Image (tube, protein in one colour):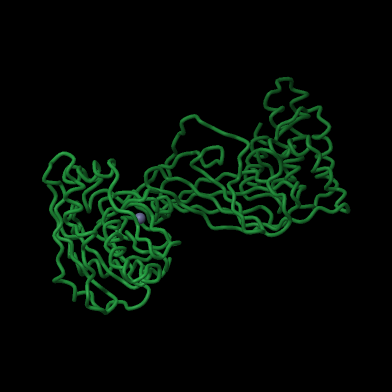
Length: 465
Ligand SMILES: [Zn+2]
């Protein structure tokens, strides 16, 4: 059996505390009955206590941030920061949530940073799921007076459900989402069977009891991992849709960390754990569809403090053709799943896609399918016409931004052939040919940082042999 005192506070300066009843049943009874799957007496026994109400009164009168709520919660529960399980939890009634003023409530105490909660004081993540908040002004705006009290109590049950680590569901139940449309209809009540079973495990499972494991709710998908940093850069900021360019991806483990960390090597959109998002000029956001798809298990690499993992991704093609079809400014960003630690998000970078016009005649070559394939996959037969055409292109238009890509791609094709060749005379000729292209690529400003660095490495390798 798990017993807890739930301290109630109202931080908007008003004194009256909402009633803790839904349809004549107290919230205490609701949780006791919902957690009776194993023990008919119920596993969760909550006692509501309003005696600390004045500790937080007047703390913030208008819309509040997660930081305000963390401060208020500390004053209400006064739990030691090292607690692994707490028996004092809190419900805070406030005006509205600054991050999303339509929210009826929030389980802000998730145990990790999120987009709406990045500035909490040190230590406030130490104990996850100590409390929640309910927004009286937001409810009043969406419910007529006869339904406000019911909605407030239902929201309180919902947020407390999150404190016990229940997720949102789409049903017409306590954990369902409130409907914003019909202003007079209060949200649904009752728990699903699976939710009751979950609550019945409270005293036995750290996934359930307050202060145990981090919150696993829907917003956990947007959590920000505090340490690992993801940065992206584009080799060019203006392109035609058919022009090659790279996205440089860099994962950095900061210097000030004390220990190494492990990351999976799958920093590649072919894995579902790494995703690239594109917002087109109309504002529509889509996932970049990688032409590759991998299902094999990933290997992991260690990053010492201050170390980075880098790679590049050719972004101009995707499965089904060119990535960009609309002219105008796009925004690009990436997401990377850090295992159980959540998801990190990169900076976003702008890319201007130019409308196609006929005068770009030298560039028409790049739109030829066999040429585009070579640029994208960096694979072709030595006898292919596209290879010869691109070598000529990068030679004759050295200043063009795409020339660096052409030189790099052709250099890689010839280099692969060089590596597979035994015959000394032919090997020498191929080395010279690859060297010429890679040298042009190595300091071409139109090529991405990572690709330039790799071109230099290939040159060093050629010079050594
Ligand atoms: Zn919720």
